[in-house]
Each structure stands twice: as structure tokens, then as C-alpha cells.
Length: 201
Figure 1 (tube, rainbow, N blue to C red):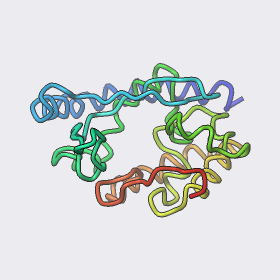
Figure 2 (figure 1 turned 180 degrees about the horizontal axis):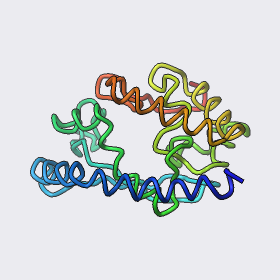
Figure 3 (figure 1 turned 30 degrees about the vertical axis):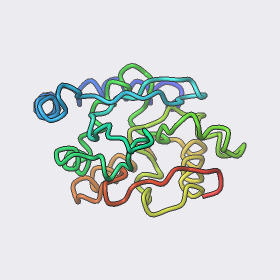
Figure 4 (figure 1 turned 90 degrees about the vertical axis):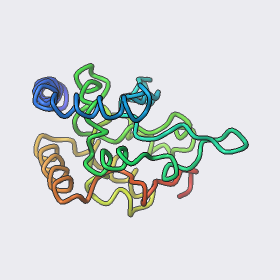
């Protein structure tokens, strides 16, 4: 019952309330990024969601679009801006995803939405991470996302899908809150970039 109904109801109510509460922060960041990025405030990227359905994830734009001589984007840690580094450290760059949650693209808790190019590289079991709505935070994020292998991350994602419950969601949200408060972070940072998944790492 929770998986099919109450989880979505909680997502709608919580994301709506959080967007209202976070409005002053959102407006402040929008002004800062508008000035720093010359009007480019948000970052949109197509990601696979629930049952691999495409949606556009929304984040604050914390990196420049600087490219090398061959026209390829420079590594993340070379493109992140000063303000962007602070915004990421505080996990504020994830706040616009509350709009994705409100729309039904995402949930507050679930496997993080990655890239479409990874789908052909997943094993049959790893592909089951898409049997739940992707989340702003998840079981892999609070269990060492940046210090564990891709294989372990996917194992944790599938564990979440198989054991999804109200208690587990509350546990993940609490652990996420504590990590943000302690400045541990639950996402990649400039000094700990996440290496691309190649099907074996």
C-alpha cells in the first residue's frame, strides 16, 4: 500500500511544503547564479526514470561549459565555479529536483537517476534499479556513494527497490539530513568526482 499510494502522496505534500520553505534560498541562489553564469541558472538533462521513461532532471547550474581544444567538456572539477562549489557542498544544487518530485518524475527517496548511455551496460539485475522512481537521495547515497564501486552502488539500489518501505525511506532521509548537516555530502564534489560507469567498475 505504501509503495503504490502513500509514498507518492508523501512526495507530493513534502515537495510542495519544502519548495515553499526553501523559496528564500532558491531566490538567493537564482540571483547569484544569474549574475555569475550570465543568466544561465538551471541545468537540464534527460535521464531515464521509472521503468526507464525519459524525463528532464532539473539542477542549479554549478559548472561552466568550458571545452578543450577538441571540443570536449573539461573534467567536472575544472569547470565547477566558486559559487557552484559551495552550492554543491551544501547540496543546494539538488533543491530544484523538488519540482521533478512534484511532477512525478522522481521521488524524495530512490535510486539516483543516471545517464541513458549506462542502460546497455547494466546486468539484468542492475537494470531493476529502474523499478522504482529515481530519488533526490537514496540508499547508495547514504552508504558511501563516492567511496564505493559502481557495482556496490547498484547492489544498494536494487536492495532499496526490493525492500522499499516507509521505515527505510525515513531512515534514508534522516541519514541524508545528518550528512548534509555534518558537511559530509551525499553527492559528488569537485575533489571527489564520480568516474563514468563502463560496465565493469
